[in-house]
Image (tube, rainbow, N blue to C red; front, side, top):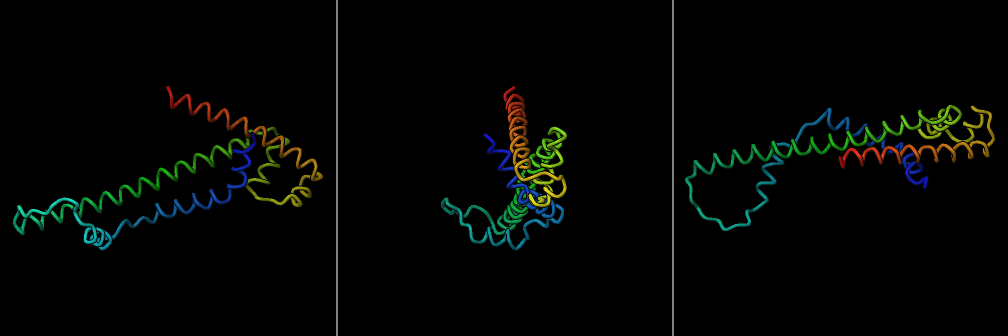
Length: 163
């Protein structure tokens, strides 16, 4: 049953790096370049039959409108994608932090050091003056508590979505 908490502890460093990368991408967003859009329009061909029904002037205006619309949509969709992904990661990391802080006082600092600070068991032994068996026992108890918190979180989220 401790799969979710264990996975979160294991994946935490990668999630933090991914969150920071997404923040950087959004802060420094340049969008697709005009050349990218021209290339995508140049190499995509219409699937329907071609029938000439307009003059050259109409074609130029139509191409310009399509170009502007496609560039806008690509940039908007990419920003939306990055934003949704960042918000989901921040919610996941935020809940994990609050769940760790919600653990009983004898477990919270130890688990914070193991999960977030990435301290080794040797360093935790020295800091808390616990033997490895005690650290293992506390860690197992904390993971059980975290799983309970995740179950409550999931239940609340499901109730909210289904209401």
